[in-house]
Length: 127
Picture: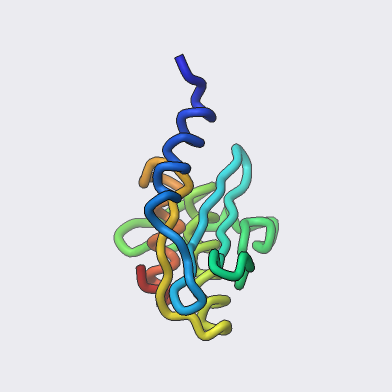
């Protein structure tokens, strides 16, 4: 039986075979570890990262205060992920990027990954 990381890696390879980012519509790649979450806007044609954000960019007290989400109040790691989504959307706007292709990195679309996507959408990024 395959381990959890190997299964995620296989899902990620399957997803990446179907999607890629361009200069006009880069790929919004998500990576999460046990403690942190990272997001990058990637131009796969040129092999360049156009913008990046992580919860390390947030102040230390970011997880303790609550983030106002679209329907409910978020706290902890999910609140941090939501704020990272807002940050990546702001940095995309600064780089004159309006649309992206969402790459969930083989993770299930719930929890922190969904919160990051919701934050990016609310920040003005379309995908």
